[in-house]
Length: 207
Ligand code: 5GP
Figure 1 (spheres, helix red, strand yellow):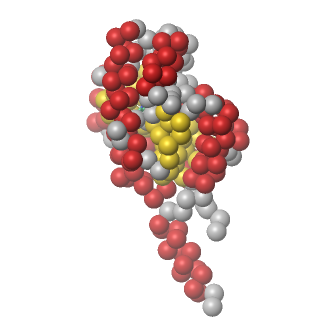
Figure 2 (cartoon, protein in one colour):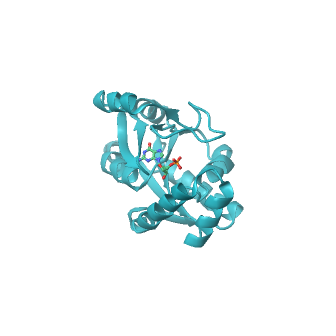
Figure 3 (cartoon, protein in one colour):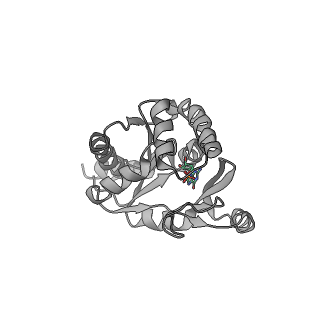
């Protein structure tokens, strides 16, 4: 069966688990994709670019966007607002692309509720909490307090791994990337309920 519409791949996991490195590594190997750029109210980190890493906005602008129903989902993470814009996602899905989200557990929950039949979800984490701590310290983009918050958050997030289709323990980047490529290719083939019904009708009509 040839799929005409796209599909969604949700990636969640603690900051520092290596989601961005993994995405960058596999993006050229998984066919047409659209990586959803979220909107956030958090401060820009060194090296980040507005419109590339995130759309960085004020709380006022974020509130206006909520009011205008611009978001597929939005949540408060580490005390800042993050949201996924609906418009570009709809366009990419119509173009048959695999839409990739890097969102937290709350975002996954919302996307599963709205678009579960075309969504595959993956939780990515380090082998241990200790390793996560080490990576966050080595990244040295955050203060000790921010790192402590992120570790606490990570402990809560791993409690919800069972809400995901797959778990990738990112110990070896090459190995984790290979697994993610397989999952992304399979995610693209997920068939929306509507298309299954159409297929059955067409299949039966040609007796
Ligand atoms: P960071 O500030 O480290 O870039 O991201 C912090 C957390 O926010 C990560 O777990 C990331 O997946 C999550 N996040 C980023 N964008 C969104 C979004 O649009 N919606 C939701 N629900 N979470 C997001």
